[in-house]
Length: 456
Image (cartoon, rainbow, N blue to C red; front, top):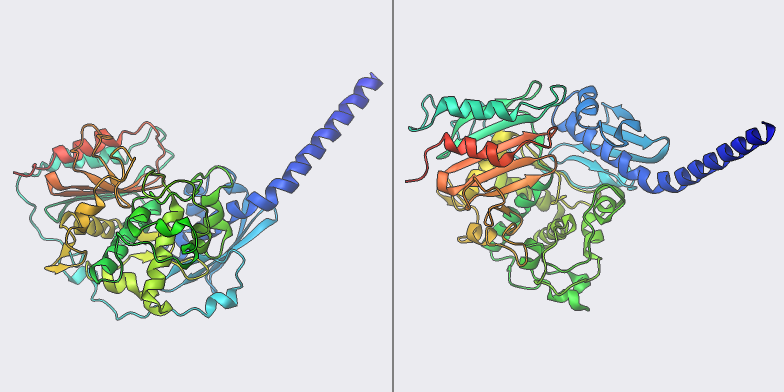
């Protein structure tokens, strides 16, 4: 009996030492990713979206190791600190017009030295008619089946587990007019919501505007100084837009990867992404890479030159002209917009963005995107099997079999969606959290479109 007890104690001690050893290795390297995710998202949801921190933690930060992260919120300084069991302390800072930035090791006073964007106050949205404002007409376009449409919207908010939220906001546009919308409790038309990788499509638009102005050429080599002395100099702007750069990259979020290092452990995300070595010949293979989008953000920054003008560029060139008053792209600590992941906007403003592409880049008679840009953006990338264009997802190969093949979309983590369907003159926005993995977006979108007239 005594021998068994001694063996049991030795086994317990050995197990404890293994656990401690793994924790000593794992926490310092992975802890900053967990705490960075918590600090950044809590900061944005509280100070940008105006949500209660308790609700954010319960609904948005309730998976994996996120509930173990401790947080401190400073409402006066508008900062959020987080750490995982005392390891990997991270701080996110809110700034007006820029949202929240994860310091990732940068000193707060260095961030404070960056300029802030300056804008003229826009007229109140409720006093201006849609689409430039939020005041809606009293009539709907003919041919819309309102009963079927309301039934389809209701389905987006139903989950197998009633305790989990599914959709948080749905907006349907037909011929440029809102024909249906619905919001979950605690959200409304004025609540900015994170688009995650839908931000990549905004990066497409900002790149297109510089192409329109003759400042970038998609077919030209990407203007990245660090690439000029090696084979990376062959990478074109178009290769970057089509996720066909050939750069080595690991896009994975359950482990410490290139993507998680970039988003949660690097001050300068664009610099981290563009330092990656070449893995394959540019333009020959497709690989989804958030790093690529942030390389483009860095190129946009270098092209504009001045930091304040860069911070003001999305609003002056894109958001204000189409009435996207709520839209914000958040920057990293070095001052690059996180063009892969961090755009917030209300569902109505995401719908406006989709409508811009439905209208071939023209808004209120003004050409925002260069002629032919939408066609270029929806041309399949090499080796993508018809699934991806230039920072837009496609249905060219029938991924959603019951939805028209001309549909293309912005798509983000947890199923943020902006569907653009030219054959139905429709834009459908779905924001929320995917709680039910069995939910069929093919069936749901098909039911929404069935309630709308097809283009004659």
